[in-house]
Structures are given as structure tokens and as C-alpha cells.
Image 1 (tube, rainbow, N blue to C red):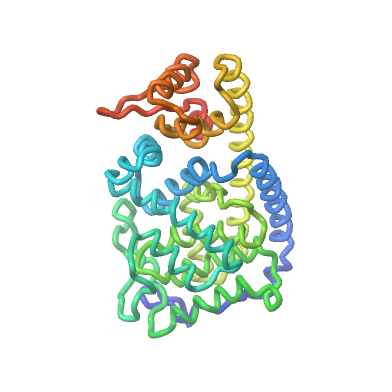
Image 2: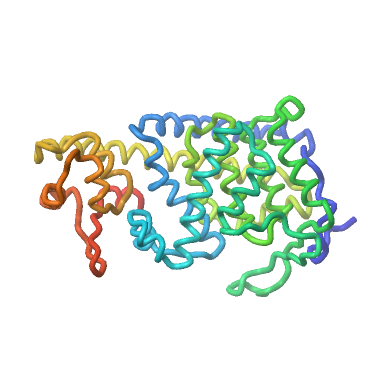
Length: 370
């Protein structure tokens, strides 16, 4: 039966895909290089004094870029201010709140996976709800959900894909997908290969009315954590996807239309490899700068220490309270003096926003901008 993009793709094949995929020479070669790059990046992550600091740096970039793939844009300035100040976060614009929800969904999912040791149906629903700030779940069978070309594209509004639809069908497909991911005895494929295959399947199932892309990209990272390939879900995968967005959607489409798994898998493995190299480079540069700033800060200020240095590199924009939390019995006068010292030493740069003052770590911002 020929594929018809205007009809629900209810005939989507269950996983696993054809067995020859696991034996393809080109895929195996790419799997080796991608795995090596990922292992090296993860080793670098473990060098950080506090790996969770990456949630305000690399994970925040991942959140910003992943939402940008869905044409939801926010500026880094708005984002960093919101992260550094809960009041600013509450008053943030809609796009910034979308990005912050992605980051929180990633963080919540990370804790769920560490607790459950498996990606189950309830975890997927929980992550989606966090992403979209909703109590909704799987889209109902009567929902006429379609994927259309964007308004800026040629033939805007044209249907390019109609996901499966029917009572109990989406649930059946999701349970098959999760079984494939979690049952390594029945499906003993390399976990990196499984991630590539599962990402296509999740996007093809399109289980929710909105937020599928962001939920799927979070699941990619959490699965790698679950399988021990990442210690933290901080792979900046969305940057590669947005830079190669046309190839991403084209290769997704060829699996649907022709069952052409190879090009899709090679694309995803290339994304993992390139992203791992980028992530390792970013972390290495952050560590090098942290060490240089620590030595410089200690030479300029007697009170400067490792803990304060780590706090300064925890996020690009800082409020004084971040430093104040580390200074025992600190008065407002003492904290004010310390912030003045940091500015004089040019470790931080003040920036006024109305009545608020933020302190920018220009070195960290420079590194994150690449």
C-alpha cells in the first residue's frame, strides 16, 4: 500500500526495524566513532567540580535551541536574567517560559530516570506535561492532528505528514517503542543505535497534540543517561539539528515514505558525534577558564576561593545572593564590598535593568557563544 501523507499513518511498522540495519558496515563504522566521541565527552563532564552546573549553561543552551527548532525564540539576555532571578522568571515572556520549562522537564526527567532506572509510559507523560505546562496526555483518537509546512516555507500550510490515529493505537505504538528501548534481552542492539531508531519512531507516532519534538529530544538524552553513556543529560544535540534542520526533516520523511533507515541513522549518529565533540570543547574551555579565574581571583582578593569561583561559573548572569549564600554571616555591606571587588578585578561586569543589577561573567558568555 502506497504511503499517503494526507491519511493517518496507521500502518507504521512496529519496532525493531529490519535486522540488516545492525549489520550495515557504514552504520557500524559511524557507531564506533560516535560512541568514542560520546565517551570522551562524558569523561570530560566528570572533571567538573559540580556537574549539575551544566544545567544553567549547556543544558540551558540545549533548551533554547530545542525550542527554536519549533520556531519559539528567546534572546540569551532574557533567558539568563530569568534563570538568575525567580522574580524575573515569573515575569518572563512566553517564549522564555517555554525554554525554562524545557530545562525543568529535562531536570525532572533526569531525576525520574535515576529513580526508576527505566523510561516508562508515565515518565514520558510527565516530561511532556512539564514541557507544555499542561495536564493533557495522549492526543484523543478523534483529534485531526496533521503536520503542515510553516508559513515561511514554500507551499505554506500543505500537509506533509499525518500521524497515526485511532482508539488505543497510539498507546499500543508507544508501549512497543518503550519495550524496544528497555528490553535489552529481547532487543540487544547497541543503545546508541536504539536511540536513533526510537527517536524516529517517537516523532512518527507523534503521541501529543503539541510538544512532540521537544519531548522526543529530551527522551534522547535521558535514554543515554539511563544506559550509562552520559552521566548528565547535557549533550547539546539540538544545535546540530537546527544547523542541519532540512536534512533532519528530510531523513525523517524518507524512513516514513520508503523505510530508508540507513540515512536517518547515519544522520543521527553524525549529530551525536559532532555534538559530543562540541560539548567536550565547551566543557574543556570552561574548566580552563575556571582555573585561570581562580588563580587570578585569589591573587587579587584574600577572600576569593574555589567555592565562590564555582558559583561565578554556575551561570552567565548572577545576582549577589548567589555569592551571599557562600559567605557565612555576611552583611549587606560585606556582600556589596565583595561584588565591588569582583567588578574592579573585571571578573564580573555589572548590567543595570531598571532597578535591578545583574553581574555578567563575560568569559563564560564568550565561551558559550562559541
